[in-house]
Length: 446
Length: 175
Image 1 (tube, rainbow over the protein chains, first blue to last red):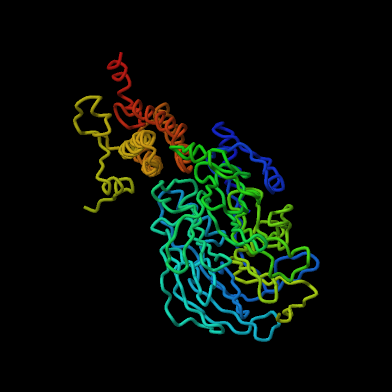
Image 2 (image 1 turned 90 degrees about the vertical axis):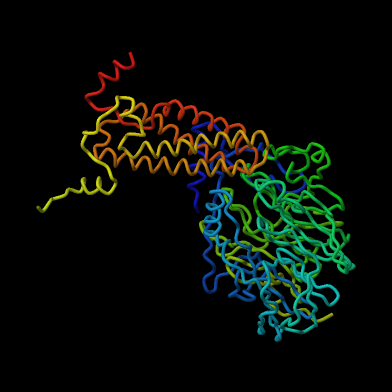
């Protein structure tokens, strides 16, 4: 792991007493749940960076699962797979994508671009959706086709009422879908535009549909870490939009969510939940990424504050009027874990204790040492609310010494048999996690 | 006649510089001014200093407007200033090798080095995201560097000591 910049930064900072530097970082467990410990913010000369280079998996290697689980490569050889989605007939869609080229506004943008490239985050995406079909029911797909090609940095995907909605980085597209087809021949029509370039910092557009199918919800990330690209670039950003599925008319459903990378409806209560990536460069334990229910009209702080009324001094002019209304998120996942995928467990056939909660894919930190995330966790729910700390389910994405990453988990979905599928954009694979006794056989059709 | 030309002479020809001291001097002031000097480094120091001082102006503009674009100007000005400072370092070595600088005024040299190091710090500060990229440390460092450069560069941007025959004149002129 490249710890040099961190040490150099700390030494320099200590020398000049410009900023403090925590050598001891409180463990992530202090930042789980409703009341995370929030240390005082720091200002860095060289922000801590610890980026394990992405090396991919060797033949036969796989992430690690606990006893009672089984993991296998569902399919490999993708071009930066970010999202997985299961169609009603059991076909699995894999969204292969990456962000558009980022403009260099400051020397820092160039340097960060190089660092991200080291971590495997800059690899070009396929800009397509691949279909996988398991005709033998053995948990290994035997049909593989390009389902939709020539997309523009797609991420979110949802099927409603015979229409497949794909959230490109700049628009929601609608494709008519006929059950069983392996290639969409009809060109997509644009349902609505989404905030995009030329600056397009957080480019992923997460997508889900309301339980009744009438509305779509789109997560639109901020256009900066903390408004450094100017407030004009933040128009319509850091927000969850509600889009009318018929008309395409839209409104901001909730604001101040820095980067809502995953959206899903909690099955018991039918309420919308989101995972979000919080701000960087004010400390290894600031600000914790989170899981939260999303209130209609709610404001969640970004950019002015975090976890309610913790003001971020980097944003000027400040808005005390908005800060006063900021809702603290429900459940902290700890800092910089970078949650990018979520799936409630109602369709799960995993061991019973993992069937009433939400699985969250933590892509992993880049601006913190020691590393955090790089795993899939399970947050148990009771009565529609989180009821305990996150539990590790899929780990081993990092090498033993944490110096390299073999994979990084992104999108999550359950396949028709109730196994958990994980898109891995460094390993360029989709992993399938099932109950050990299940031996990969699908459950009998209900 | 077949002239043997030394490497030094080749470099001097290429750079259009001459080693001989035959040009009539209007006096100490003009001889040592960067305008008349044959040395390369003062030109680079001067150009770099202009950029670093300009960064103070764009910092002030940010502090007054809170438009972060001014910080983008500042960080590029600082980056340009630092690149020219590095080039000036190489140029000084060249000037010394070609005897355009016979001795170094270590006080002035240290002053310019300090300005460059403080500007490097300043570039790191300016690489923060948001208000704290400028206020207060960025502004303070820009102001400090500007003050150092204005004082050091008031007469010229050279770090060379005037000719060995001149120090007495220098004393006389100034006392």
